[in-house]
Amino acid sequence: MSLFSGFASDVAVDLGTANTCIFTRGAIVLDEPSIVAFNTQRGCVEAVGTEARDMLGRTPPNITPIRPMKGGVIADFEAVEKMLAHFIKKVNRGRALVRPRLVIGVPPEITPVERRAVKEGAVRLKASEVHLVDEPMAAAIGAGLPVTDPTGNMVIDIGGGTTDIAIISMAGVVYGRSLRVAGDDLDAAIIQYMKKKHNLLIGERTAEQIKFEIGSAAPLEAPLSMDVKGRHLSEGVPRTVRITDSEIREALCEPVRVIVKAVREALERVPPELCGDIFDRGVVLTGGGALIRNLDRRLRDETGLPVLLAENPLATVVLGAGKLLTDRALLKRVAVE
Image (cartoon, rainbow, N blue to C red):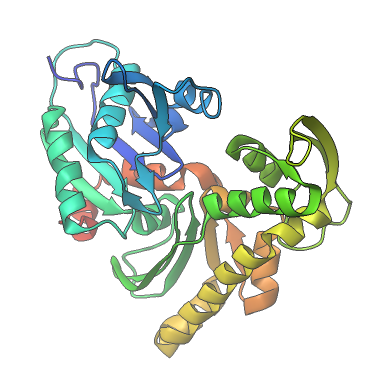
């Protein structure tokens, strides 16, 4: 039986480095971490998504949690296929057999070989049609930008593995760049800072929590602080330290500077007419990294552009892919081979 037997309509998927989202029947029905835990002794999948994420740093040697998407590319084809199959089964409600169309948002950096692998994997899941869309284009559509107009629209999608900067006009990408500095690098910067400044070892999940609770790209009006638990590197025992928003801003300084620099470079490379459009219309910021406090203000101060945060930054890509399910003409124009 098809994995899609529970779907009465077509399906959109955001295959992200950090999270995978599924949209069908006019709503987002799944949003879970892109993580698969393999049991190497039994040669099977132990857990996927949220369950696999909860295992990070807590597994015995025979269970290995991996991220099949790394740095905006597919690191493990088999794991991606198993992850998609699991997520689709999870949201399947066992209705009459159908073979829906599938629209998948993919990082623009993946190669033609990787794109073909994603398509073939989806076909094995019994989809009738499979269309791939670059995530920045899907994000622009999801944010409600008029991508088919002969005017410049700029979107900055800060995901887990890449920051995708795209300037779109007439349903095409006039300028596109994928920067290998994004949410995961912000987490890594916090981990390194905690080691260097506080001699404290923390994990990925703790770093992510710090980033969203007190992380910022520009000074805050009211100071923030939080207690962080980890292992003291020299003493080897658990410790709790109190950190402030200014410390984490210092930790994030370099990756944020790289992102801002890439945005400025993008503006220097586009035709003057489109640049004028962008100054009039502004820039839309999407992705999980867009939720860093005052990142929009930092970009506004550095570029002089109006910077708007998408209404639902974490879901913009899958919402855009979902809109394409009902607009075949636009899908035909923006789908990638």
